Image 1 (cartoon, chains in turn green, red):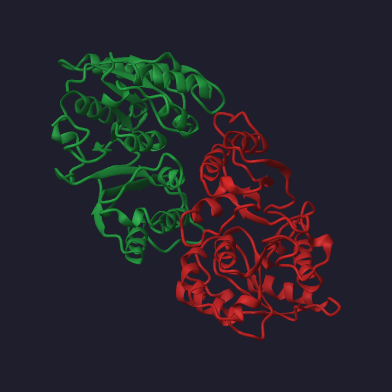
Image 2: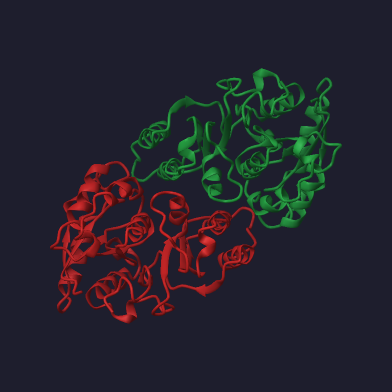
Length: 280
Length: 280
């Protein structure tokens, strides 16, 4: 499937119009690149959110259910997609099920629910990543993946035929047991985190690895855990030691590192694996 | 049951020996007050924790399984009880099942698992609360409850015959789906939180109220939500508005406020209600 028209919506926090314009310019400079349509909802503001729940829900459905769009690109994370996820999932039409959905962080709530509904979703950079150091490379990577599914855009450990998903730890922890939880049996589960204390990482790994559903994954890979606030006292273990320890306790295979995270190097992870959401 | 000997253990973070000594003096000044034994493990230190997992596990079992003790009082919260909870729950003897367990915050992981095993547990102040402003009143309240179960120590909305539990929001969120999760059907669920952003409170309430198991509670009461870091931008809703909203969405009755929280006014909530863990 050739991606010609990409709709950008913001189910969580607001996207700066200047950033949106810069991302459109990057796409415009690409040879045969996709055309980007930034839904005006992206720039609404309602407290913490890019417009109230109804505006965010409607904008998502405007793009997802419209046959003219080939992909839905989540504008940024922050917080808020879980507030509309169940309602939008109940209103998807057949066009929505044929699209690609791309984002990460808070967008993981929607990625999870969309994947559970059989949609094609991928964990990867978002327009708002442009403001990160080196963020233009992240935005370009997402656009290149949408455009050609070039292997260089993909998380390097992906293997054809091996089902994979990627989540922020807090987001996955908070969707377990809800209607958004997908069946992750036999999937390689990639996890990343940002701005959480090491004790909170440990607590998250307790929660995740103590779930019968998570114990059915094929294994866990650890992405980057960045911007960790100081632990008082010293926690005494690195993020990788923490993840290895909980994998050992729970009988889940620890498979090594994953090239994902809240940073410009964040690679693309199509849910279900590279014979799934990609156009290979 | 008359509480004569109380053992203090620290399944999470370390208790300052000076604080422990002051709490023993308060108990010593009571007429017919309980005798307190502070397990030496409380003062161990291993990174974030009051000794390594094995030391904390052994200390808990030393007190819980010993027939001389009538109650186990958790020294303080912090983080760490979930790391030993499953192992200690598998090793409880009949004496452990006859005791009272008192604490809150991170100790909620153990309270939950002990309650699921049929033990008598209560949410209430801990020795380390002494260092709070007015904390001597919190410690005195806990000792008075252990001593006489005086009604003035209890959370005032408790009604005989109505099952009740109380949890820190993050702790309950992180034990859902794990072997520590108790059956909360038909219970009034009291929730409190400290040091979480309003957006995180909202996300926690999504997680909690989206669970089929939590939708079977009799209703939710909101304790205090304190020390909230600034939200950027303004979240736009108070903690009570957030909890009311998620109760409305999920069909759970919102029953009003609860007199619990991370503060000196924190009242006692015997799990199962006041005909349960109390000695009425």
